[in-house]
Structure formats: structure tokens, C-alpha cells
Image (tube, rainbow, N blue to C red; front, side, top):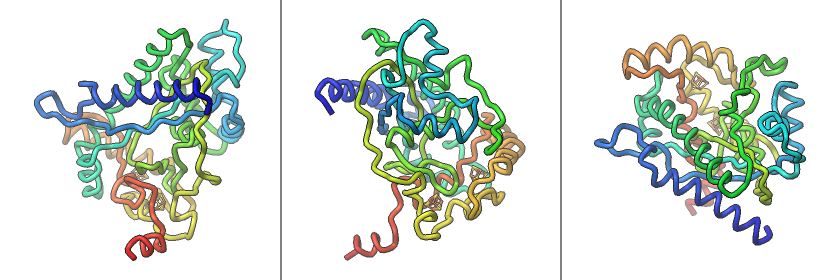
Amino acid sequence: MNSKSNDLFKQIVNLICDFVNHSQENLLWDSLRYEKIWNEPLVGISSGADPLYRKIKDDIGEFYWTPIEIFNMTFPHSKVCSSDLSVISWVLPQNKNTKLDNSLQDLYPSERWVRAKIYGEDFNKKIAWHLIEALKKQGYKALSPMLSPYFDYKESERYGYASTWSERHTAYISGLGTFGLCDGLITKVGKAMRCGSIIANINIEPTKREYSHHNEYCLYFSNKECMECARRCPVNAIDEKGHDKIKCREYQRQVIAKYTKTNYNIQSSSCGLCQTGTPCESEIPKFKDELVNKKR
Ligand code: SF4
Ligand code: SF4
């Protein structure tokens, strides 16, 4: 990485981490019961010209955006090409208590998990705005695809209901992790996390992807073992074929949303049981032989 690119990268990491570590809004309960929603984030960069963006669009459907498409929709008069753009992606790890509480549940999410989903996502949006504003002051143009007025959900021929931008796919392209059997993204801090991203006309060298396959960190895809996420799912929406999005969504909308409203007075359809209580919850899971070697 050249020194200008390196400095910009450090500056971006500091902007995100300082905000997450010190903002009074990263708060799970209220100021009287202080507990941070998100721990220290991971940050990765990918180029707007990375061919994986096009590949994912071809796979999901024509409605899925490449970085240059949503950038040009947002800033129609700017004359940039894909390689002038960087995509900045971040991963927000759930705190220890949230993971523990949810791992002890077997039918419904814990209150901490639900609060992290609702208030944590509000805070995630603030991270994006914070970064956009900071870059704007330095003369860059930046946008958050998830916050774009054009953001939408459409029907993908291959995958059913899908959004015009996926934070998890963006994090994967930006070197932050690979997909598990349950569709969650397994990162260095595990898959109990949320992610976000922005696109800017800033030139930063991309983060190296330390993997060669999109399922590399999942134990099931390596040796057909594990399947703990499938065992955690109360409606059998995960099996050897992967994640049944329709079954999962039905349960979340029809059961979880009612349960959270009645029991926590917050309506959320996030279940997250398959993200906790698994070997990939908080780290890249270790293979049995790695564990044996570690104990020696
Ligand atoms: S629980 Fe096991 S099978 Fe499921 S995603 Fe994690 S490593 Fe893969
Ligand atoms: S999020 Fe979906 S797939 Fe995961 S445990 Fe809940 S219902 Fe099952």
C-alpha cells in the first residue's frame, strides 16, 4: 500500500472505530444502564472495479447494483469510472452478553439480541452518515447504498426476495469474511455481527482477501462436519443444501415479530439463533486437528 493510501485507510479506520468506541449512541439500554451494542469494528476496502461486484450482479439479478451504478444514480453529474471508487465496509461484532443470552435461547431471540437489532441498526446508519459527512468535508462524494432512496427489494430468479445491495456480499468482497452454511458471513470476530458500507470517490488500496473460496471458513464446506447452525434452527430452515430463506422469513415474520412485541415491547423479526451458540459465533472456527495441535 503506498503511503497516501495507507494514511487514508488509517484515517477511515480511526473514524469508524472512534465513533463506535466513544459515541454515547452505541447504547443497548439507556444511559442509566450503560452497555455498548457493538464492540470494536473490523474495516475492509474493495475497489469499485472489483469484478466480483459484476459477478454477484450476474448471479443475483439485473436489479442488483454495482458500485458505479448506484454512485452514478446518486451523483448523476460526476464523471467517474469504477476504478475511481472505493467501497468501505465494516463489521460490527455483537457484545459478549448479547451473544451469551441468545446462545441460551432455543426458540426465540433474547431481549438483548432484539435490542441490538433495532437500536444497533439505527446506530449502524449513523456510522454511515458520520463517515459520509467526514469525507464530504475533505471534498469526496460518498453514499450509503442501504440509505439510498433507490434502495429496494426485488424478486431474484435464483434466490427469491433479494435487495439491490447486500452488506454481507460487500464485506466478503472487501476481505472481511466468507459465507457459512446458514448464509451468515464468518469473519475474524465470527458471524454474530452486523455490517455496513459506503461508496466514495476515494482511492484506497483494497484489503487483501485472505481466502480463495466463498465458503472457506465454514467447517461444513471443508469436511462435511459441524452443522451446528442447522441444529440451532427451530424450524429446520438449514440443512445440507443450505439456508431456506422462505422458511426462515415465515418464522421470523409470523412468530418472532409477535413474540418480541408481546415480550419485549419492540417489534423485530430478527431471530439470530443460528448466529449464536455455534463454533463460528465469535471467530473463524477451528478444525478438529487444529484444536488437537493447539492443546499439545
Ligand atoms: S455452525 Fe458450522 S456449519 Fe454452520 S456456518 Fe458455522 S461452521 Fe458452518
Ligand atoms: S434466523 Fe432463520 S435460519 Fe437462523 S435460526 Fe432463525 S429461523 Fe432458523
